[in-house]
Length: 75
Image (cartoon, rainbow, N blue to C red; front, side, top):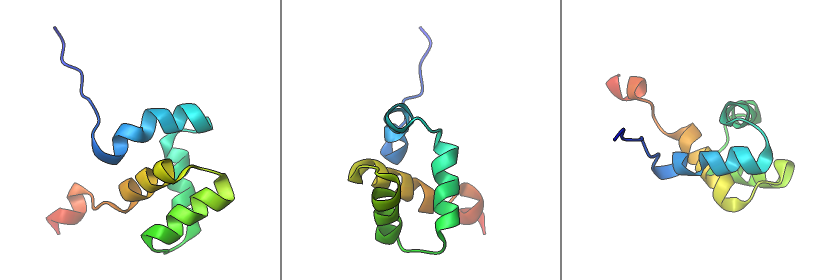
């Protein structure tokens, strides 16, 4: 029986976000990058006010966007 990788943390919201808002996660990462160097809640509020995302979905996207990557941690 093949084992499927089940996303955890903020990424567990990604399938629902893509389905509900009709955009891939890469789109939302670009939106966040273009928003500028804002703090976590400022980015969440940007997604909520400008793109009409719900709080949980906006928070998951921002948490993933701001999370350090493995490359960042190696420095």
